[in-house]
Image 1 (cartoon, rainbow, N blue to C red):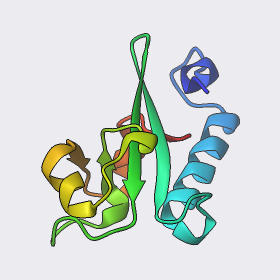
Image 2 (cartoon, helix red, strand yellow):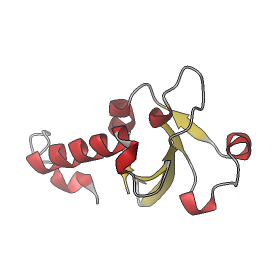
Image 3 (cartoon, rainbow, N blue to C red):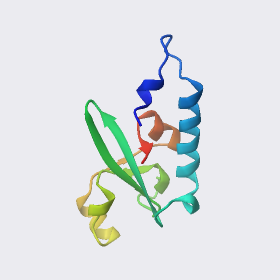
Length: 108
């Protein structure tokens, strides 16, 4: 869903966008709700391209919460092991789930 459609002319966000963000935030913060064990597909609209990513509920970097890390890969093409994932897949580490959502990532 393109959330830019919910922008209003004064630059504030509509109630629908706030509700969508709250749903995404709740889903990210509650891995027990994820449809696929330990993996949550994410998308980000960049110009006319939909970027794919995945959050994996597995410790990544000692200082980072795994829920704040988006792996930049289609979840159906992830490597077989976490060790291989760390070696070959680019990741973006955020300071918080809110920062991740502010960067435009959405639950797919």
